[in-house]
Length: 149
Image (cartoon, rainbow, N blue to C red; front, side, top):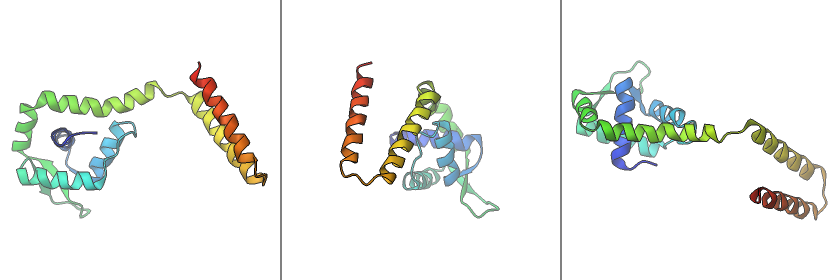
């Protein structure tokens, strides 16, 4: 989703808003992307260690014993110097959620949920060996009809 430099700027931007710990950063990125991007701890924690080594964030004492980080003056200077790139990276993050919201359709979501429920119920109630093939044929036909719209 982000290269190393972009991730660095996204993390700095989020930490500049308020001190954060790794899990909080993961959740903030997931929230800003509308649930479409949730970086793994294996990405976030090494990046936080790198930021701390650079001196752009500093670990703060925390009441809940999590490693919380705050931005330093050096980190603010980086965000000032790279403001355009930081804004572009944040725009990409928030753009994921906005794009998904524009394409979201409650009626399609409801219909898809009904379809999956019907398939699951039918598969549980019938032991006909041919049933999965017949259901797959119906689903393939529906997909073809949708593609032709």
